[in-house]
Length: 50
Figure 1 (cartoon, rainbow, N blue to C red):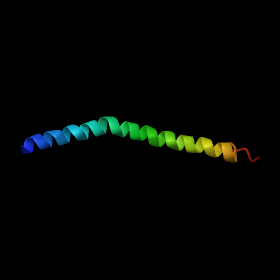
Figure 2: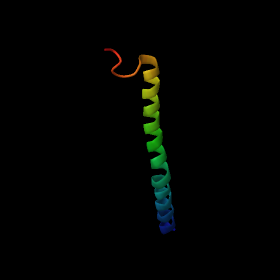
Figure 3: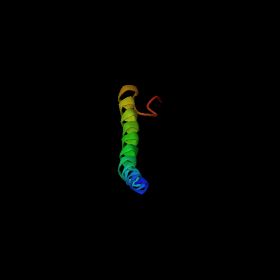
């Protein structure tokens, strides 16, 4: 009974590591890029103050 729980736990961890980690990484990077893009719409592009 204990072995079945460990096996299920390992399978859930692998599923999270394979699917959730890349999705989370793309969401974080995409969200940061979107925030930078929106800030440039408000404040203008970098180096534009010369």
